[in-house]
Length: 172
View 1 (tube, rainbow, N blue to C red):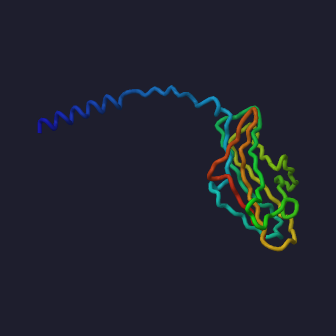
View 2 (cartoon, rainbow, N blue to C red):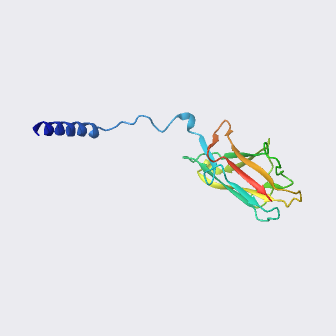
View 3 (tube, rainbow, N blue to C red):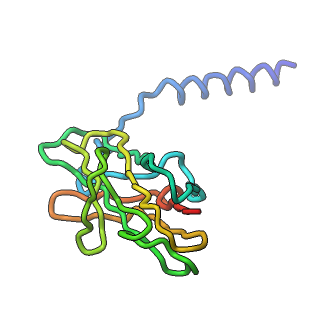
């Protein structure tokens, strides 16, 4: 009994010594190369989201995109996305089946097959990618894949999340 009490007391004293020590954190705020690195991803967080719409739909199709940032900057950051038809047997065609538009329905133009969604001052926010269905008379179900892609320039990088960078649009 006496031996158990001695061991228990010794263990308690050692535990107090180790838990009472102040931990110094000398790591700072992170690596400098990530100070201007941001992330964008579709909401909800998955790669299985498919929006199925009728070709007669007049309401804009909406895909929310979350932009993650811990800072406010003196520049705007842009999340970029592209349309993918590879591997799709009956792909929807931009300009025939749908248009990428702003919230007012004005058609946006791709630059090098890439569209941009700007986030003012690189602030964390949720914005929306809008698609207008054009009512094409081409028979069959048409499908398009929308992929967020990495955007790198001299000021910043906007990366994507592996679990939230793809959405599908299906036009019936």
